[in-house]
Structures are given as structure tokens and as C-alpha cells.
Length: 409
Image: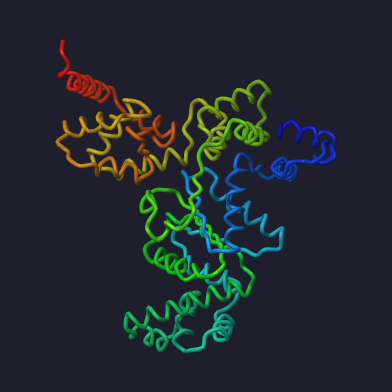
């Protein structure tokens, strides 16, 4: 319905509320995005409502939200849509993503303290001096916001005891929280948390701990891999919102939007849409890549293919063999089948499988492991040579014989 109403509004050059009364908010947002040429925000209305409810809860007691899901599934889009809605109600927010080889602490502190990235060091020093009530706190904050310290300032900090440095850190964190509240910041979003290094994670963990006593709504966006395959203890107070596959209606809307620039005949466009929707398995970024390739049934999206290959290169020989074996067995493989394979390879323990889960290749289910996405399975399967297929088939047959050998003939 969203697409039909929006197309009618565009055709007659009117707004959707001209065509119908009491327009639902999701339809209104979709129509505005399409008419402006922005990518439509679809299929995440329930999650958006969840975020709003958690935000409202935060007005009476501190709360936090953890948005997690596969890379490219729409975490950033959801976070930004929520923050945009806050802005329209005159609520201030801060959004800081973690980026590779980037000074997150510097950007985060400057965003909280309203310090422009274009401001020269001398001007930044004046701003920080007005905030800090001691020389050591002044030096500490200067370092956080990325100002180069002189030799005397570096010496003063480097000769402090660990306990004194801890006290300074707590004071600086408290000041950041206070400044955020004074600036009427009601929500702070930290995106790509899984990409943070140990120093950045320590900073974020400490900030979360200090802010627990205040009315700051924290939103954390992350891909559940690596250290965040399972929630760490310091994030267990956060309410988790997991993003899964988009429904068919949302995929249809996105596919229609993505095929607009294509100059294919209508019948080919429709075929491209349907093939891409099927292979995307409800994943918006993969859907977009498949449509842009114009070969939705034949290619692997380049970013996903490169990421998968790069991951495979980091695996041990046993893990690669295990992964190829699982791929030959299908999208999902029972635990006992994997156990049998590892026993044949004289491998004990679950580490090989656990590592594949932490890398975002496999997902554990109640009695089996499944590939994170259909195309990851297809990519791994495409790398299996014929001789390996015969070997895995033999393993499978032997495992079945072992399973049923105790039964009476």
C-alpha cells in the first residue's frame, strides 16, 4: 500500500495527506523520503516504537538501548531516524560512530562539549580552561579533545599514580555528563561499537557507568561479533533490540526505490527485483547491492564477498575444512554432525565452531548451527572443489552409519 499511495501522490503532484485522511506516520515518513529522493525507512516501525518507549522510560529512570544485528541490516538507519524524530520535537542528541583508525575520544568529547573540529588549538585551550577547575584536569581534558600537550603538561600527567589517574578520569567523565545535561542533550548514540579498540571500549564503559545516575538516554549500535557475540557484563543493563530480516512488503518498497535509476525494460526490472529480494533474504544492504549489479541471480555483492574471503584467510586449516563441510551439508547442520567431523579430525572442544560464530559466519540455534546469511553459505559453497565434496560426502555417510549402528537390524 505504501508504494501505491506514494506513486499516486507523485503522479498527481500532491501530498499523501491530500489523497487520504488520518495518514499513518510510517506511510507519511515513507512518502516524504521517496519524494525527497532519500532512501525510504521501511520495515522497522516496531523497533522505532521500542526505542521511543525506552526513551520515555528514561525520563523516570535511566535506561539504555543496544541495537544489534548483522552488518548492513539497518542499525544506523534506525538510530538516525530516531534521533531525527527527537530533533523535530526540539530534543538535542549526539551521534558519534566509531570508525577505523579514527580518534573516537576526540570526536566524542568535542561533540559533548560543543567544540568545533575547525577550532584551532589555542581557542580550544580557552574553552577547556573555562571548564576545568584544576591544572591536572585541564591537561587531562586537553588530551581527550585532541590538543597536543607541551612537554611540561605531558610530564605532569605521566608521573601520576594509577589511582590519581583514575580519579582524574572520573572527574573528567562527570564533567562530560554535566555538560551534556546543561546543553539539554537527552540522547547519546555511539554506533559501530564492535569496531572499538580496547582503549575506546574502556572509555565508553566508564562513561556509561558514570551516566547511569543521570537522565541520559544511551543508544549503542553494534554488530554481534567478536567481543559482542554475547553481551558483556557492562552492557547487560541495556535493553537489546535485535534487527532481523525485513518483511516482504519492506523489501518490495526498497527494491522499487533501488531500481529507479535502472534503464532496463519493465519486465526485466520486475524480474531483477524479485530475484534480488529472494536472494537478499530480507537484508537491505545486500538487496541494494544485488539490484545495483543488475544480475540479482548470478553475482555475490562485492563487499560481502570480500569480507567473507578475508575472514576465511584468517581461519586455521581445521576451521576452513569444517566450514566447507558444513556448507556442503546445507544451510543448517546439527551439532552431532559437527562433533563427528571434529572427532574424525582429532579435534576436541568447541573452539573451532565458537570462533566461526564470533566471526559472524555461523549462528547457534537450539540443536544446530546455521549460516548467518544465505549468500555467505553460497560463497563458501562456491569455494569447495569436487574432491572436497566427495570427502565430505564420505564423512556424512560414515556419520549416519555411526548414528544408527546400535539399532537392531
